[in-house]
Image 1 (cartoon, each protein chain N blue to C red):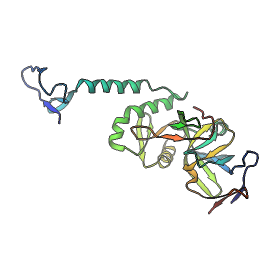
Image 2 (cartoon, helix red, strand yellow; image 1 turned 180 degrees about the vertical axis):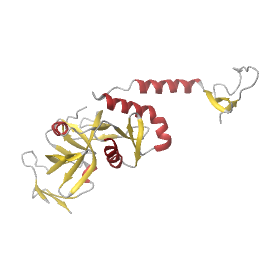
Image 3 (cartoon, rainbow over the protein chains, first blue to last red; image 1 turned 90 degrees about the vertical axis):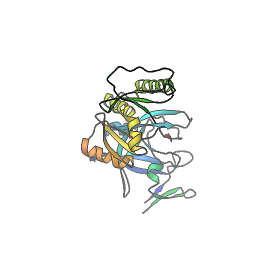
Length: 125
Length: 141
């Protein structure tokens, strides 16, 4: 599956269409734009998705943000579906952003080709 | 190696000049079962400080059920470190409900068993791991 980079951000960035499902009822799903972020240890979802799907609280962890200051946050869990790949029991950090981040906890399971000059992202089988 | 003081028929006294007092842990036994420990004062202060740390655990959410599970994890942590160091445990109803090698396997079993409710699945480590999320997203507590 090949995606064009999102060119509404500057510089353009690799985004995918991510399906998020309720871990207790996989028929409840929402699709969200998700940025591939190899700098992130863990994946995030917008609060709006967390609230609509009523994703349950499943733990806490300490996060160091871009300013380096650590803070403790609650975690949710969800099922993430990306093309033919399904990630059950994924850990999610809710954020105030309007798009998701796919961190290395997810993308390390994938073979990705980032073609910067062509502004394309390909997920290999 | 702790000293043992077994029950005797006559009252016993502790000699404060005893070299073991204040330096070693002394276990008091009754009918062959340990009933108390005399620990060096510095160790006692350390234990009090640890207890205060657990007591002052600040809430990170407005979810009382999750906060109870989180507090239970902190209370159980010394024992969990002995048995499950480096593994992931699920705390449900303030008890250990599941143990596994990673978050994903544990939470999937917990959801199948308990459904959609707040639980606390944590990695059993002395010092919690700090995760990096350098993109400028505002993380919700």
